[in-house]
Amino acid sequence: MSHAVAAPLSGANAIPAVEIPTVDLRELAPWALFVGLLSVLVVFFVSTDQGAVSVFAGTAIHEWVHDGRHLLGYPCH
Image (tube, rainbow, N blue to C red):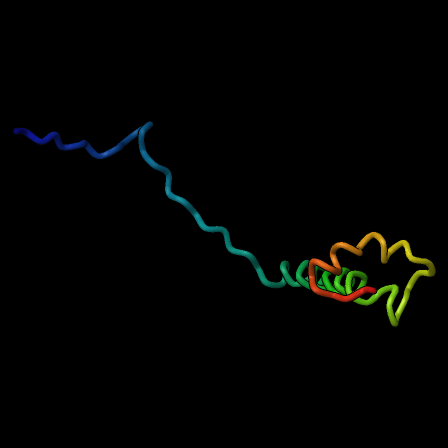
């Protein structure tokens, strides 16, 4: 029984080296702050608005996020 030995890849069949990109934290910080503030705003509207504190009059926001409140465990009735 003979075993074939594969030749090393070269030329067109070579596998290119993978470079891992680096991210500068100074470039990432504004986006992280934006996403953090947006997340806090979303949590406010889902959990609090139309309850003890309300930004807009009426029940429109309450109705839009009603199912999300129940899914996250917030009481709203």
